[in-house]
Length: 582
Image (cartoon, rainbow, N blue to C red; front, side):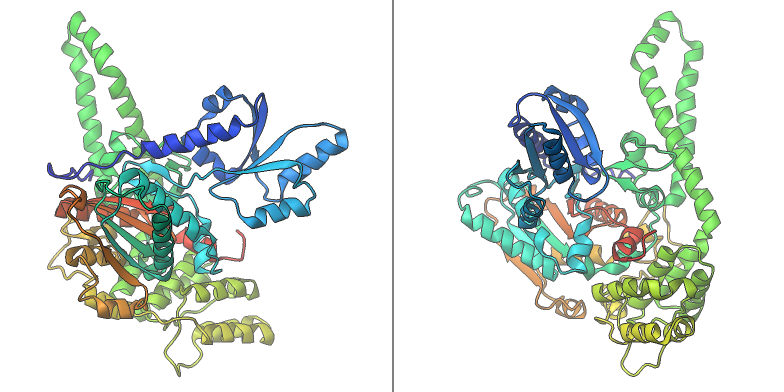
C-alpha cells in the first residue's frame, strides 16, 4: 500500500537541506585541522555519518584513515598519552555530536589531557531517513529520560525544533501531551523568543506540530508489528534506514518495490510480489518478437530498470520467506491471538497461561518480558503471571526498571501476592524474594488502558471479517484488532483543533497538567500548509504508527511528517530497560 496521495495532498518540504547543513558544518570542523588527519568515529555514529558524508567526501577533506571506535572508555586520552610517551606531537580535536556536555570536559580533565585537545560541537541532530521521516538517532533518549529522569536531551530536541522553524517557517498550531513534551515545548519557545525576528513574517510551511511522549502510549509499542516495514524491523532490525538482516544485507530500504509494500499488512505482501514478478516476466518476454532496432531501444532504455526491479523483488521475496520461517517456528498466529485477546480484554486466563508457558519454555526472556508488560498495562496492573528460574535474582533490577518506567503497573490495593511473587519466592533466597515482593507491591503508576480504550473506541466492532486488502481505519496495522492509541489521540485533537472534549481521556492518561495547545493567528498560513502536520515522538516511534498515520493522512487529505528521537519497537524498549546483557 503505497498510499497514493490524493491529487490535492500538500507537497512535503524538502529536507535535503538538513543533510547539506550537517555536511557543511562537519567539513568546516575538519578543515580547522589542515593537512592529513585520521578520524576516529564512535560505532553508533558510523551509519548516520555515512548518510551525511561518505568516505569519498571525507577523503576530499584530507581524512587519511578512518577508525571505528567500539568501546566507550575515553579513547582520546589513551591516544594522546601514548603519543606523549612516544614523543610524537600531533594536534587533536574532539568533536561531540549532537552537543557537548560539561561532563565530557570533566572526563578530559580527569585524564589529564584537557589542555592538549581542542573541543567542538557538531550540532547534527536531524537525519532525514525518508521524505516524511526525520530521526534524531538518539536511541538512548528513551532510557535516559523515561527511566533515569535525565533531562539533558530535552535541550537537543528544543534546538532541533528551533532549526526546523528557522528553515521552514513558524508552526501556527502546536499541541502536545506528556511531561517531556511540555518541557521540550517550553524550552523551544524560549529559544524562539530569544532570537525573536528570525521566523517573523515567514509564511509557515507546516501548519501543525504535535509533541507526544512515548509513555502516553506504551501499548502500541509493545505489540507485535504486522505491517511489512514493521515486521522487517522486528525480524531483522532496520537501523538508520538500512536493514541489517541476513537477506537484505545493508541495502537501503528504498526503491519502488519497497515503497509499494512498506505500509501493507504482511498477509497481502506475498501476493503483491508474486503479481509483480509475473508482470516483470511479461515485460522480459516482449523481447521475443523484437527486431534489431526495437531490441536496441529495449536494451538501452528498459533493461537496466527491469534488472534492478528484478533484484529488489528477489530481495523482498527472500525476506518474506525468511520472516515466514521464523514466524512459523515461533507460532506467530498463537502469539497474535494472545495479544489481541489482551487488547480486547477477553480470555485473560488463557492469555495468562500462554504467557506463563512462554516463560517456562525459556524461548526468549525479552519476548516474555514484553508479554508480561502488555498483560500488566492492558489489565491495569493485575498481572497474574508466573516467573520461572531464569527470572531469578539477576532480573531484579530489570523488574525495578520496568516498574519505574511504568511498563509494569501497579495492582489494585488489597490484592494478595500473585503467582509471580510466590513462584519466585520458591526459587530465590528469602532476602531476594522479599525484594521482589517489595518491587511488585510498590508498583509505580496505574494504567487505565481499558477505560481509555472504551472512550476512544480503540477496539473496532466489525461485523464479519476485517478486510485487510481494503482497510477501513488505522486498526489495519494490527490486523483490525486495535487502533494505535497514540494515533487516535492525534486524530481526535486535530479534528477538534484542541483538547476540548478530551478532558476525561487526558485525566485517564495521568496527563492533566501536561496536555497543551498553542494557536497563533492563521492569517499567514496557507490552506496547503494547514494540511501538513509534524508529529514529534519523544522516546521513539514504531513503523506501525508511521503506517497508521500515513493511512489517516490519505483518508483525510493531510500529510504527516514524523520526527522521532529514534525508530523503536518492542524489543528495543525491553532491551533499554534490561540490566541482564544478552
